[in-house]
Image (tube, rainbow, N blue to C red; front, side, top):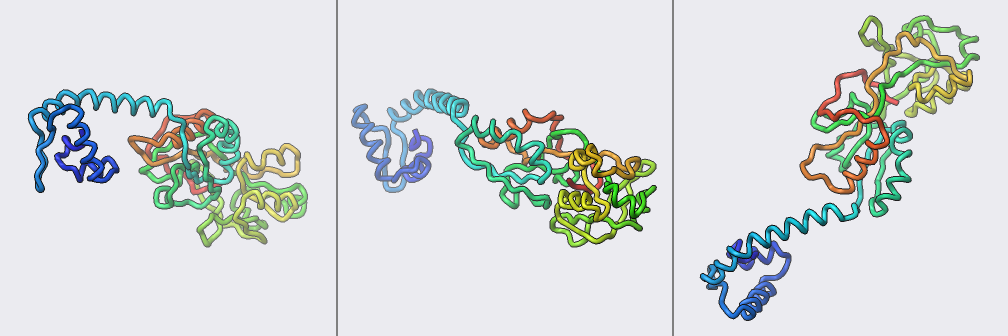
Length: 302
């Protein structure tokens, strides 16, 4: 079939992954079995004999149908195997990745997850990642994006001890007179400017203080020690607020913004290991409809 389709032993051999001499021997054995020549061969060309053309026309539909049936069966029954490279924001890992790891590992024991936990905004495709979990406003427009959960909010917090010593800010701009714990987005030289909303519009406050870190949870721990005012997600500060060890501040100016999304390049035929991971993550989250682009929101991070 390969030789008849290409009328070239060399091209057919290359497509089958065998040598030309081996393929020639296979064809010769078939001709001996059926008792008739199937090909006319010269040093420059290959053509079908009448018997070869008749056999090719009759066999081709059945071989193609068989190949398709086998391929479909293999796709349905083959166990996903291979490596899936995932880039995930740190805080998102605890919400959407860690909870599914045991179930995924048990269901797909031959899939290896190569996970990078990092808040840097990297080019997924250029850096060789298959899929990512990140905040909506930093997703490239040509990626498929699936919302994994509810909107998020960031809130300023401080310990009761700090507020007793330095007072409580009444407006976000009052933070300019406070000792604030800064955060630097990976890959950026300047600290992140805290963002608030007033009258439906976002505005920034370039805070200053005694400490800058690349980890939000480290800043929260520093706030617990009374170092200053921190700025973090409600998920991160909620346990401490409930215990009374941190006090939320300026909540009227802390507006929600789109949360975490699962994003990956659009592709017509997705590898089974990647499909298995995407389906597992989506099954563990209140998934919303996929979109090609997430709306513009303030540049904030967990």
